[in-house]
Image 1 (cartoon, rainbow, N blue to C red):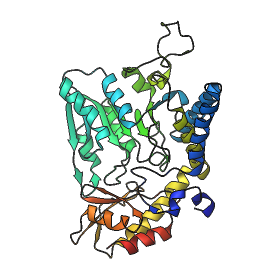
Image 2: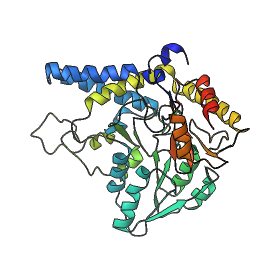
Image 3: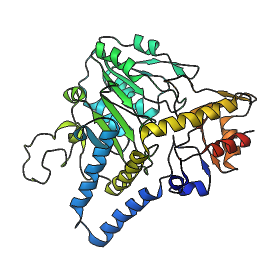
Image 4: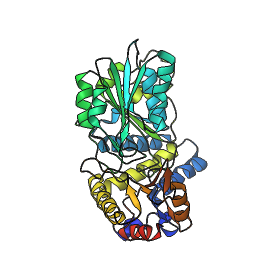
Length: 374
């Protein structure tokens, strides 16, 4: 990526930042957009309220375009957990139901299902990890005619494994189950087509690859999911005409819009809007290709070192997340601390060190990481 784009990220002046799978350092346009909206509130109060809503709808449209959905299928949420919890709570569960997931999912994609298990007796079936991978056949074998949900991350946070969603989705559809996908580690760096990949529900926050501060996320529901899931947390903006304050019999808004309960974190959405415009300008497919090349380079140069690459690098399974282990005894925490002293920011995750570059990182920075690794 060119120096002009890289200059938008002040973090590059202070560190080699390779921890976008945790929290991204937002670019200058994003922070400027947030500050501008806050200044507007400070100086004008609610005078420009309608303009704020227009930015919100533009951001919604950009998110919909990013996943090949319609804008009314996108609801703004606080984070991934909110989105998945409202899905878990909004289904009409029955005795004998089960759901299928992966044993090492991020807690956002496990706790909502475990609560349903504990409260309603729903069986939670899990497949295990094998050498940094999910065996799709093993996962599929757990799905049967009593499966209501198949919950999976598009990209796993602790391995970088990218699931073949269409393949899983075909099995889920054959048993009339909904496929629920945590897309937080893919959105913004991997092209997503919710219909082609048979995704019924997608949930995400925006503080990772979407380059936006914490506090805003999204929920997508397919028409199929919308028929089965009811909004359980509702408010004054969950109806078609929120400004008709005295009309309490409007019914719920169309699509996923009924899941929006009230006023949104509008300053953050202004920032998200700026980040989405930047990502759209660069191009998601271009970002994916660049990051695959960058991480391939990293993995190739680790082969002759005292490191084991946990992440699958098979075509269709690799992602922009690389997880490694030191084969001579250093823990992930040791490695993280060693690199942090050299202003190289990564993340220890379990028994692995996770490295997650974004599109403004360079091969030179990867070389500096390789040189710094003990």
